[in-house]
Image (cartoon, rainbow, N blue to C red; front, side, top):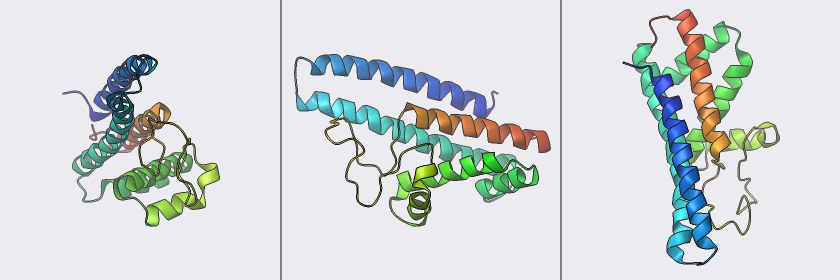
Length: 174
């Protein structure tokens, strides 16, 4: 069986490419019609990226729990990253962990933590006084984190990098 990290990379690449093609076809159709169904298709494409990112991280958590024989895979992974001196990686991992929590649950502790460091984040967070990421963008869906291709790829990259560190310390982790 292939490792989760290999499969998640392939899944993300396949899904993003499929969504890119669907987006191109939809933008082309929008040139001749402003039908609601076409606009909803653009929004569906954006929402699918959010579902992909949340799903990747959620399944990674289950993989960590199983592979590390623990009840909180993210906490255990963070401990390993600390012990290995991978502090930058731990911060990137934690930022994405918080972002996925915000995507799942909305405002709360994770949102507040990200807002406090919004300027330093490699992705966009909708600040409390903002209504849109890009006003007038008909494809925008209502999320507090902007989930674009780069965000999804960043999730995959962090999952891969964290997994590699864990495998150095715990070779039984697949």
